Length: 136
Image 1 (spheres, rainbow, N blue to C red):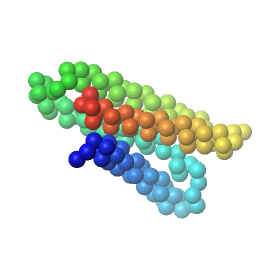
Image 2 (cartoon, one colour; image 1 turned 60 degrees about the vertical axis):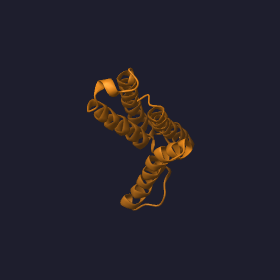
Image 3 (tube, one colour; image 1 turned 180 degrees about the horizontal axis):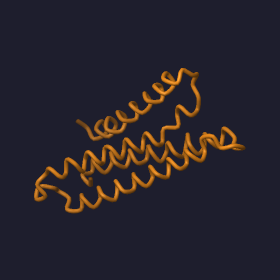
Image 4 (tube, rainbow, N blue to C red; image 1 turned 90 degrees about the vertical axis):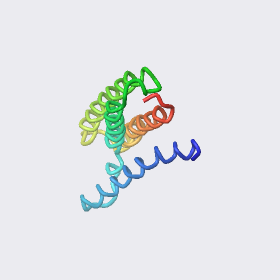
């Protein structure tokens, strides 16, 4: 299996599932498509956080002598703390910008739809990259 295929599948499967969650939000709320259905930064960040937490749980079961990278635990800890802090920051953004009086829809789309989604996707991408390189 080529590295390009491994990277693609490791990143695309969670992203596709997150996009399905946007469709699910639309169906559950029984409304037409709205921009807020695609404000998925929090979901992407939680996906990255969950992947890292499962990875750490797996690392705890491995004999420390068999781990190829000696600093793998430190890298994983820094990554998990970063995910958590960015998750809290994103929740604050969503709380402030969701129904902000006087803000235009374009500002919400920029902050929640583009910036927040980019942070979540970057965290997920960093996890895939670190995992594939054996750093986490």
